[in-house]
Amino acid sequence: MNETANAETTSPGRTGGAGTGRLPTAGMVLPSAFSLVADHAELGPAVVASLSRVEERLRTSIAHADPLADTISRHLFDAGGKRIRPLLTILAAHLGEPDRDEVEQAAVVVEMTHLATLYHDDVMDSAQFRRGAPSAHQIWGNSVAILAGDLLFARASRLVSDLGGRALAIQASTFERLCLGQLHETVGPADGEDPVAHYLSVIADKTGSLVAASGQLGAIFAGADETYVETMVAYGERIGVAFQLADDVIDVTGARAVSGKTPGTDLREHVPTLPVLLLRRAAAGGDESAARVLELVDGDLGSDEALRAAVAAVADHPATEESWAVARRWADDAVDALHPLPDGAVKDALIGFARAVVDRAV
Image 1 (cartoon, rainbow, N blue to C red):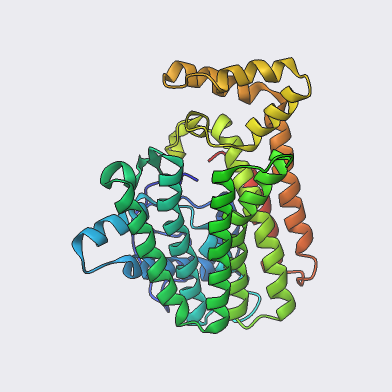
Image 2 (cartoon, helix red, strand yellow):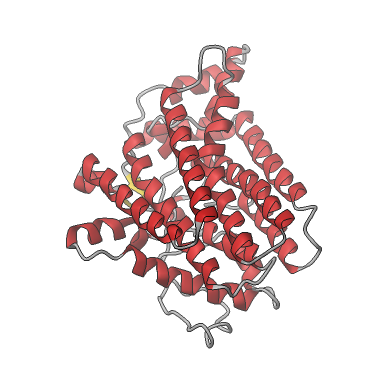
């Protein structure tokens, strides 16, 4: 995921910032779902204020006394982000008592964990850029980038330990799934395993698990009904998968202007994504048009011209629209999971969040 933007930084206080109306945090590009929440008369001011405080707490928690560690750890934080995980934590908290301090600490934990995974992912994928900036390993090398991710994991673990045994168990289980997802992505599908099913399993672990934990922790520390906690787990898992599937399609259809990501970055880096996997399935079934597109995708994409040709070919093939349909089905399933929640502002916001995940350009 590539997340970048510009905004001025101010931090409203706990008592006086609720009426600011917009979240004024540096580098954040929030999904369009945030607009739905921010403009909501009942939820908006409280969510805006909470997320502003979370951003400042995140900044403080990342800071390190060691100058090198501080610079490297802040690299991706300063580059910005969508902050969908803390947003989901705060939204879920409104199913109970959202003003508890533990809610905001949990929001910091999930975003810091996410940032840590990005350092590792970029090394594993040999990614050149992240959020429009050079990847950490491009600047400091693989070993330093991995250690930066480890430092952030350590900080997140220290913070979550203050939240008690249940939170620590959730964090540990999520970390295990993050590692398993990366392992399975690196090794690839087993003989006879459907590559698409394998890929969906990978992104459920790599993305869905942490998004699910975000909503789960928010509901827990707000003291919400246990049924609502489990609802947020099911919803978050499905939303996480839908979000990553949308990212896959955006890679071959999205504009660079806001995201900072050149269309086709995943193609050039040979990262397996759903449109390409569906193309391979179609080609194996005798679709000659898919086979022609794959000749471009599997060719030398070193030049911008070759990359543009491959992106255009993938975007024009029905496999891309099929990928959008799969992403929308996961978002619809997430909405269906919300059935146990009471009707009202929180449920409406979560439904809007699900729709916005797949109806975005970056």
